[in-house]
Image 1 (spheres, rainbow, N blue to C red):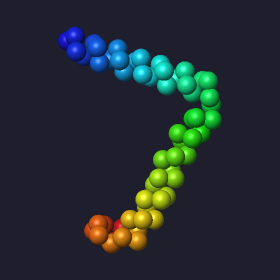
Image 2 (image 1 turned 30 degrees about the vertical axis):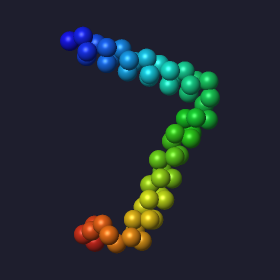
Image 3 (image 1 turned 180 degrees about the vertical axis):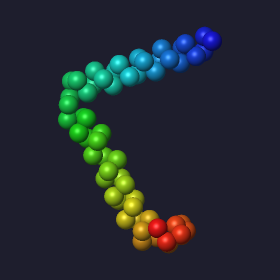
Image 4 (image 1 turned 90 degrees about the vertical axis):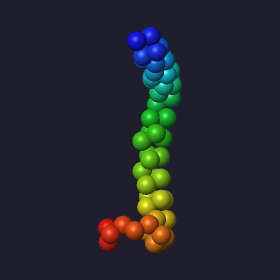
Length: 58
């Protein structure tokens, strides 16, 4: 039970640090929201051109 409590405690500490960072710099939130979309766009285009991965016509 103790390892679970330690894990939760550390997780909450990291979450608190991230929340403080976002409060300090709200543009970070925008960056974190846009970055995954950019990665999907870039890798989506790359994987569309590379036919090494069978997608079944998707």
